[in-house]
Image 1 (tube, rainbow, N blue to C red):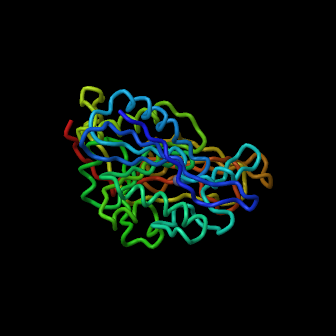
Image 2: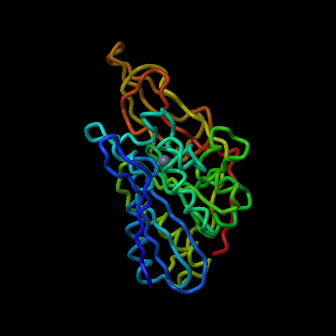
Length: 318
Ligand SMILES: [Zn+2]
């Protein structure tokens, strides 16, 4: 086993500090597949728990092929900090989502330079995974081609959202969309909530990645735990927003099944002390994503449900 650490230079700050992206290449020194796993294109999305765990595991157990781990895919987004909050989803200079610059350009904006380095690495792999977190959420995969459903069954993350990135201009320049065009199988995994340590979620994703590596014969299957018998895919979601400026608390926990007419959240308005407004669901579904705050302006996103009408149950091969 060889572990190669390599820094790719992406540019400099105005004061001359060099910016680079660190890759760990774990090489079993035996023929086999190559898997690329990236973390942290968006600052504040702590998925490095999974990278640390995989590194230790693979150092001991990688038997064929290579795994590239990128703990911090973006040296700039993690510097965008205000008090205890790292606000790294958007490039503050360009006003653009950091994950909309792919396939990138080595002579373009900082975001495009970063994307170019990442993309050049990711496209060498047989399979690429982009790890994220999503506001406050349960773990879920995001996949962009129906043929990837076989991979979803192997990985076994319980919920998986289908987004046809070839038809959606909103997702056209993500890493996943770029890899689709390059012909590399890929998956984005939302590993749970922003800036959190959620052991159960970390476990679900880490074990899923191990099952993928075992299916590619890169690790021994005996080292994996079996996943769920069924997984769920969905593509339709609905958003509920704050009807007015208020402080707000949720009526349900993340992952709860919701029936039409049930309370979703409660609004507390300074103009109506003593009166609590309950907002009820107009849909049947699962609460899979919530905003990481209790402080709302009129019209802000509060929660998202994935809709029962649209879910598909896939039986896994386990
Ligand atoms: Zn993200």
